[in-house]
Length: 263
Image: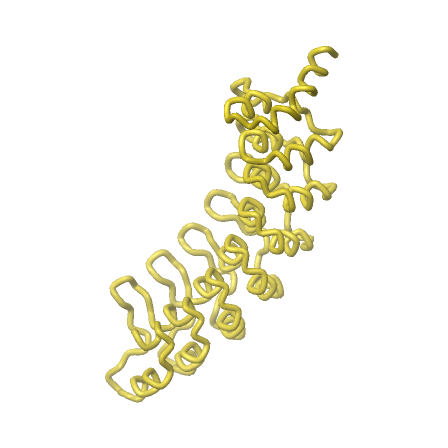
């Protein structure tokens, strides 16, 4: 176990020659040597273990994370490539939370791994987790511009798909102030820039609530965004900006609010 985790190939070779060593034995955390080697990107160790008939290459841990999932999560492209060549590895297998290898790679911004997984016909590029958050949703939320670009290049990815609360990738990117992602999403004809979630909160509302002075400017540059749309509790973007003391956002919204009242 320790040899696999630390990438000690020569030690592992010696151990694998013994008949009393189980190369697929679980530790106290339900982790196999292959799982640990894959998680840490030890390609040589992974190849050694996969050469054994008594090693299951898709064996999950206690929450359903496979060696591929862990390699994808940590951006270990070499290991991901090795595992994807196996017929007995499911490249789209979710863990108990619905998180697939692609989900993990997108969440953490590992573009190389995302490319490898998107190159598979048996990977659902728009598969949501248990909260209906897709790989694109998380990539947008975390500001992973490269990954967002890759996913938006797919015909099978809905760029406006909401999560269980109705929040879209644009809403999340706006809240987090990720201007680059917001620009990409606003450049799509199939993204509604004024789409409210279940609580009536639009991307502009989220941008005003978060740290997105630049994002608010981008959204207000659209002619189809209502600067005064309140949420279900009557809170407007301006009120949210005032509550959070975002002076720059308030300066952008106040003239529009006045104009709206005058009209």
